[in-house]
Image 1 (cartoon, rainbow, N blue to C red):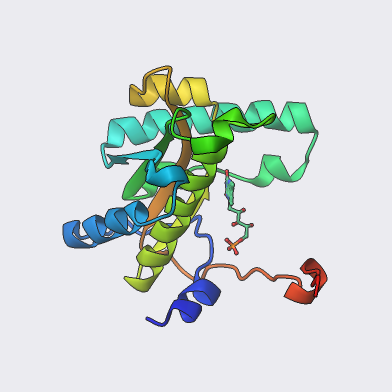
Image 2 (image 1 turned 30 degrees about the horizontal axis):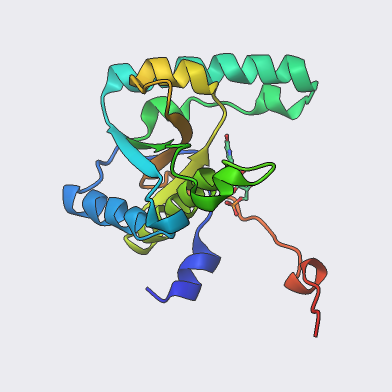
Amino acid sequence: MDLFDAIRGRRSCRSFLPDPVKEADLEKILEAGTWAPSPLNAQSWEFIVITNQGLREKIFSEADRCRQWAIEKSGWKWLSRYQVDFLKAVPVLIAVIGDPTKSGVDTFQEEGGVAYQHACAAAVQNMQLAAYALGYSTLWFTLFDKNAMRTVLGVPQNKVPLVLLCLGKPSGEIPQTARKDFKEKTTFLR
Ligand SMILES: Cc1cc2nc3c(=O)[nH]c(=O)nc-3n(C[C@H](O)[C@H](O)[C@H](O)COP(=O)(O)O)c2cc1C
């Protein structure tokens, strides 16, 4: 698939078929993640692949608890209509775990130590595009408490669960999203 078609065609999916992800495809997707840039090539990520039904139920419970908390905290009405049941149905979840010690020179900046998150984000985007090119859909999911997710996944205190990447075949049409023209978002200093 042409890279620009993948960039334009990928959309966030929140409804998945139970069809499994082929092992060879999963490996390609994970490898695509590892080709992301990172500070000093520190490769600030680790991936946990979750297919276990019991674990997916626990992840759902934590996300739903976090959703309830966010409804109260934000007062956002739409959050009551947003359901996270797809976490129980999605065939694969890839947890992206960041290592704050792998932030390169950013560690010494005033607001520093966050570059590991940027690297993990780049890995997530690579995996999303690779998955799409292989005929799958994804969702970059973050509605969870990091400490609670540490406990669910058995992640040590010195590492941070940043993203749960949902991966599978979409069930039905995925709603399209729009973007502002890049010119509205760009300043040229020529
Ligand atoms: C940092 C980040 C966090 C996100 N967290 C969530 C999330 O918790 N739940 C969700 O449904 N979508 C989440 N998304 C997906 C966005 O809602 C989605 O990318 C955006 O609405 C644009 O839609 P599109 O990806 O289909 O173009 C997240 C995306 C990013 C980049």
